Length: 293
Image (cartoon, rainbow, N blue to C red; front, side, top):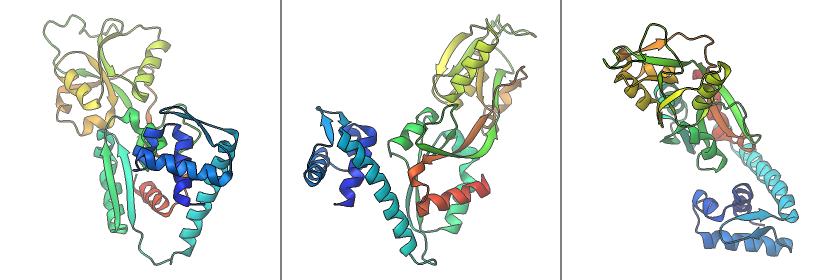
């Protein structure tokens, strides 16, 4: 039984989507189909029920998935044990994070990784923080730096690195025609500039709901930096992780609002699939991140 075919099957068993697996595993759809067909020939029964794009596991497929997970984990452990202890760690890790996280967490971590393991290549992708967990679950990233959601998927491991306050910000100089701006804000009238989705938006929605307020949503934005800019220009009140302000060119044009109760802070850390915790590259990165997070 070919280990590569098992790796392809295991990813497909998670994604249940041929095109997504082919793209994530860098193979053509025809190569993926042939690999699954060879496995089915070897076990002597169908592993998947297919249509043109998606798939569902048969009972035999469920059993092979469990077997493949165990076998590949044991194979990774064996490879690690057979390596010489003084052999330099090398390879490539794909890390996904938000632009914000790249400002305040990555520099120290990557600097120390590069110093300790110069032959380890880091491929960094920045983007929407709301996509971080999906990037890891789909194997598009080996790990992600992200805020822990209130409900972490069972397949994922999370290592906390830092607590980051989540704050409301207001313009220092609101627009002259702004009727909402006064000493005591009426939160039902204030034009709010919020994240369009993700953990931050859920926290904001919960904060308003707990206070019985139906907020006046002026804009829903993808990206914390854009929220700071809109607030600085006087369009309303926004909500961002406080760490964003430390690196924003607009920081002097906004101010933090003191609110009660304060919003629950972000728990920012490293997220990866549990089945990969024993991989040497993953373990080495985690250890250094915890030292310098």
